[in-house]
Amino acid sequence: TPKRKPPAQCEGPDKKKGRQGTEEDNFRSTAEALKAAPTEKRTVRVDPSCPLSHKPGAQVHEDYDCTLNQTNIGNNNNKFYIIQLLEDGGRFACWNRWGRVGEVGQSKLSYFPSLEDAKKDFEKKFKDKTKNSWAEREHFVAQPGKYTLIEVQGEEEAQEAVVKVKWPPGKLLRCQLQLLDPEAPEYKVGWASRSSRANRGTVPLPTGHGPLPLAFLPMSLEALRAPPLGDQSGFTRTSGPWHPTPALPQVIHTYLKQTGGSYRSPVLRHAWKVNRDGEGDRFQAHSTLGNRRLLWHGTNVAVVAAILTSGLRIMPHSGGRVGKGIYFASENSKSACYVTTMSCGAHHIAYMFLGEVALGREHHITADDNSLKQPPPGFDSVVARGHTEPDPTQDTELELDGRRVAVPQGQPKPCPEFSHSSFSQSEYLIYQESQCRLRYLLEVGL
Image 1 (tube, rainbow, N blue to C red):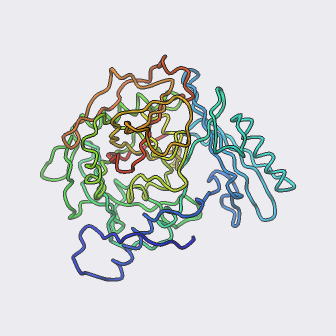
Image 2: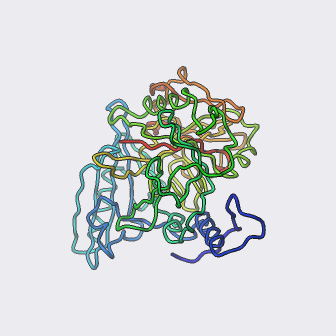
Image 3: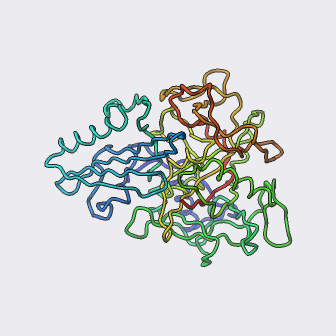
């Protein structure tokens, strides 16, 4: 990993002033590494489903890697297509994997006599699936009936810091997690701690152990002497554990069920309330903005720890169909396109976030504009309006920090006024990291 200048130091939550030591220095180094913005190209991993992902020396050639998606609500389609050009010693191969989102799907590994032949196959497949040229992908234009190019958050250099920097035993993440499960009274509020030996109520977080790119270390949710949660909206306090009121889990469950798509109904396994240290204060800068919505954000399971530590960030290489911002969706099935899963017995599980987003005044678009870096003057956010949107008449509201936040509860309905849009489902964009606050982390079975 290339060396980089660390940002300002960041200390743990219960550190006494003036106290120095090796473990504390290591903890600061870990936090700094997590927050460090990459200065070079992101690290691209071989698809974990590819047989070459376990082979030493096998790697993606340069940036020949893409994930495509095709969504058609009318035909009940939500499909992915992965294309990678791989180097295997002195040989070159193209790896293709395709299927429905949430499934492993089908795959094919083809070797070629030369690098140029492999490039031609990769570029032809990309053109066939998208009707766009690989050389002009920075100016990608979605075509009807074709796959679109999506920005999937991979194992960024920030995530490599998680697996390469030694995490001091017993030190705490700067993030509080609370299990939202009234049926599990033994779970208590606490900080994610590596020192725990408990096996129940765990959050899988990545470490560098194991042969696979996605390896996990259980991080228990246990009762520790940590500061109390600052925001108790939607919760009641008891003499022991904290519990959500019955309404909150039901709202989240309905949101998932109604917008998750019928092709492979997602199942809510666990949900945690997230309270990142300092994020609430940062979010206060937008206290005058109205039009707040609880929206989905899907991500690679390998970077959940980094997001919990440093929040959703606009990385130097970030980009997509609506420019360089943070992407959200009102339909779970849309955000599901951006997740990678991990096997859990016969099932696959994924992790998704629900964030409170201060949208303010929305600027609506119906065509790709990957040059966007901020909303137009007079606007606070950009919404790429899709063919469908959850029925707004079914929306409910949560009160979070004294403000009303809209939560979709209805099934997606056609939007005739946006039937000409190049977006099948709406995407919500903000271009300031401080304009959202992570509220919930969900473990979803697919």
